[in-house]
Image: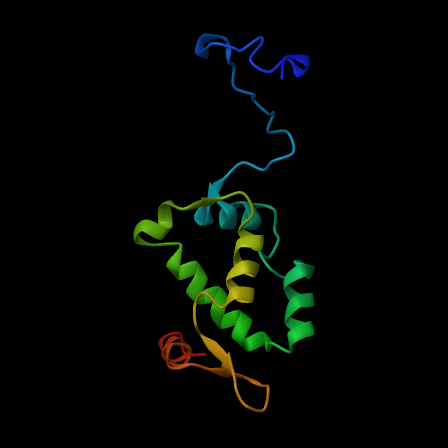
Length: 130
């Protein structure tokens, strides 16, 4: 062990400095409300050009109307109460994860392999008149 220097040059608590990484490659975290306001100010639709979402939906045959309903429910969830305070660096990616993991439980895949609304999905559809 002495050949490897084990036990030598042990730092005391005062000598240990935290490593601070620059945030230059990271986006700042913001609320969904702020993200949507920035999209509006830049005259861009929040999801229209987000290819990762549309490529995923196409790959699994998830209908556009289900994605549209999920977006309405997602926006609602993150625009009121505790959800309003939540901050993310990438809201598009957060929504994609919600879709991929079916966090909102709006759909399921039936025995024929087709997406179908759950009771929660049908209720959300009625609520939002879609």
